[in-house]
Length: 373
Image 1 (spheres, rainbow, N blue to C red):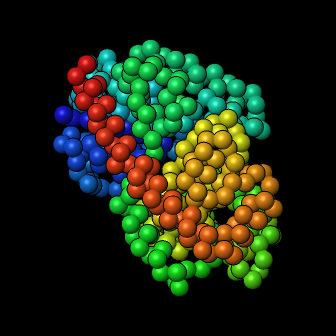
Image 2: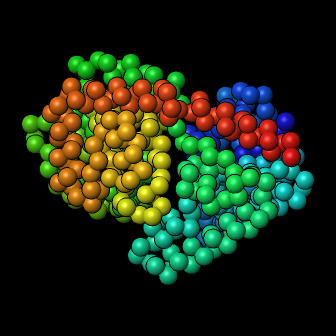
Image 3: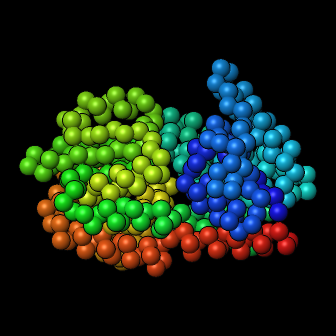
């Protein structure tokens, strides 16, 4: 069966889209095509890549129109049995592809309407306008599309239960075995703290850098930032913070490099502000830190508390309080036996329940169900 995945926003080798879902389907015998901007090759891991037009020298609305038009025409030309898209702006494209007689699945990574509110704090009129647009598009999708793959239970509750499957963003355990192996060599590790992911104000970059400034100089700690700033002016701002001299901003990193940096760290940070779309999120980085044997410092949200305290793999903090964040980091760095025990418990939890190997079977079963309809 030919399957086409589409994304106009995510990177070509996005961990969920490419490494987890597309590679899983290819290994199960599907002919898998991935439509993205700037594909790295014609084929990788049994997945065929195709380039969506990426234009920059046009007004914003025209840029959107051109990339959506490119995505539709390229996808339609492949004549797939199933189309699986990953961005809310592709909902109209999905509806048009469905009219060709194909099954269409929407992979819902975020609570998009509420995310629009969170990302538009400085322009609430724009935020609520986007909230309305995304809410209408999601309502149309719910009434028309064939299936929905949702990343968290809270998001899944928004979509028709008979057409929805929960496929959580848990880690590929085999991928992180290298970090686990290196983490046993304690003598080569410095007091590095790691944050991997998009770097924004509501993901507490100001608070994290401020916390690093509060750690004792004797710890010689460094904060490793793996990700891109949004907006880029935010980086210029935090570069003026007192803690910046103890930060290494490494930009976006490949999966291989991510594993290497996880192996060089002693603590993983998941510090999100208490926005509505964050409270029920299940960040990939949380479980990757666990898989790599790192103790975690995370925002004290009820869902995260249930996971972290249930496993015993980290400490919870007020994400708006740099002093509390610094205190938790310092405790973990100064108590290596406690940290190591937390890391081992996190690894075991990933091995037994929080892993992609379990989630991937849900995806395969869902595809079988969709195809049989």
